[in-house]
Length: 165
Image (cartoon, rainbow, N blue to C red):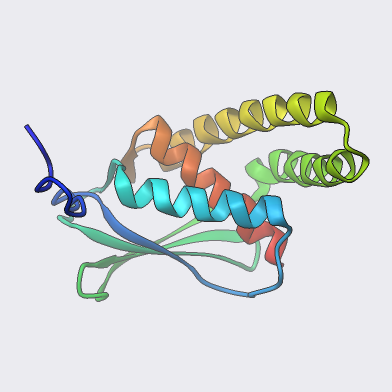
């Protein structure tokens, strides 16, 4: 069974994300951060599990950081606000700091042409994103049902947002 006609774009499932919009500062990101952001947004558009309690979708998610909180502004497919959800960033702080260290290390390794270092940093980054996904799922438990891959991609976007402030 196919979700979309062959060659056409996949249609969002009725209770999933239609799109994700990052709100806030638009500072220039590093090439790695921009690539992470673009890949996460693309992957979320292709497949995700995102089911806020007591609402039907598809949904548009405006994601931002405001006053030390991760803000999920969840809207219907017509961009009408359904609910807002704020999560304290405190539990994410160590992971966000580690992500920035990895981004900096990656930039230096690329500049110096150290292929082995680049591969090691990439492995560490994947592990960090996995840990962030587990934390994201735990923080959203009882509020929004998400799967591991959706949580991983959302954590990636939180890292990018955090670099903008």
